[in-house]
Image (tube, rainbow, N blue to C red; front, top):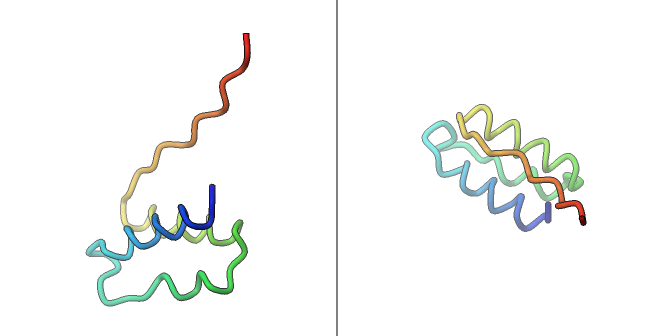
Length: 61
């Protein structure tokens, strides 16, 4: 997943009641993409957001 997509997901979670009044986005400036992805997942889980896993690429016939 691209860094841009991860930041968009994080911004969406930031607007949820669980995180209102808290800043969960500033830390993203120093996180690697892998660490940012984990941060987004943890925040989504804490907020009760269920994101379906990414579909694996289709196999050619």
